[in-house]
Length: 478
Image (tube, rainbow, N blue to C red; front, side, top):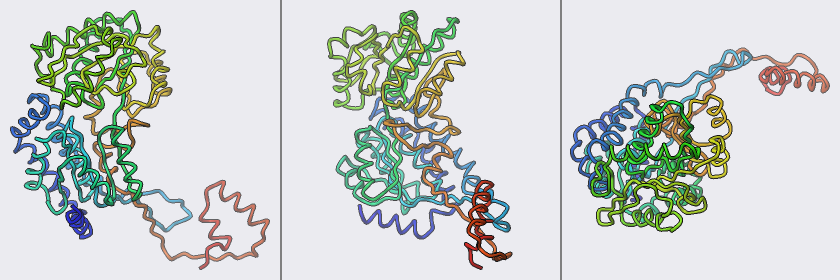
């Protein structure tokens, strides 16, 4: 392992990865990898998670093709130095901000979207001109094997390497020095990554999770309420069966609106996924026995079980849990204090929907707040009085595929950001460059009277003429 990393450092030092042509070739290779292995990717995603081809293309392959093509179309603009404005007193001079690659980076990807969460940050890393080690999740073994076998056939093996293995391999990788670590996963493991990175003062980006609420205001139009229920049902249960950091974790609604919303959610579950456990279709399975038992354990609490208003059935052999709705489970129960990461949807009722702001603020900062409302004043309150990685109004999940918007957390839901230009920035260092001329060069022409100096310095700072201070007061020697 150490030899492979040393080889990557030599490649980076050679300047090979800094070439814009090299970067573009690697991005094109990512596109070829997806297009030429479409059927294989469908197969490995089904083996690991039971995803059907439509879900696999929508949430994995399509995301990567879009991301890589976007980076290709923008790369020349991204790598160009950006002109910086300088005070007139520095004339003649030129300032610019030059993006440069950080070096050799380590990317840990997650199992729930094993293609997207591996290749999307990789696109950012190679766009920025870095050498990369990709560590896929061992919990998606078929996808991990696919990367190990396939990536060397498409990408520059001297600059991009895939290292498979379990937690022991991850620990060994964290013992080494990196120029950047990018991690997607749970807050618990994120703490370990950050602790290890601190030993080498390595910068990190942590894409974690959390309990993402959806605030549902009352709508006068029944047709709009039907759209809300459809979007929540599709986003909650249609995206890896709720095993997503951006999935709706719980709903906040007014008491008088809860029964209407529940009935509409039930209809959409039946329409999209089937009427009962035996009829379920287009629903991913739980990734493994451990996670299945963790989610099932949430339902075993008698007080939680009594709050189930739809679903609750499980198939332990197939690792499938029916889309489940719960009404007002105890707020101190585990289902309301821990991230669910599965197909369970608690609904919490409030007297007034504006109470949702205090409810959200009483808990750790979420990765996303979803809010369905047409009330402009309420929108402003959500934006100004809550903190989260993202706020999405009147839809769910769609913010993840917007290359023009940054994606990242706040507080316990992570820090750092990526997607589109933000991925390029995450794996770049913005170097400040100042070009000065040797002429003209002036010397002070008066005695350095202390009182005059002090008054002049105060005046110069007030009007931001710091260069004039240096020039006239003799602090700079010719």
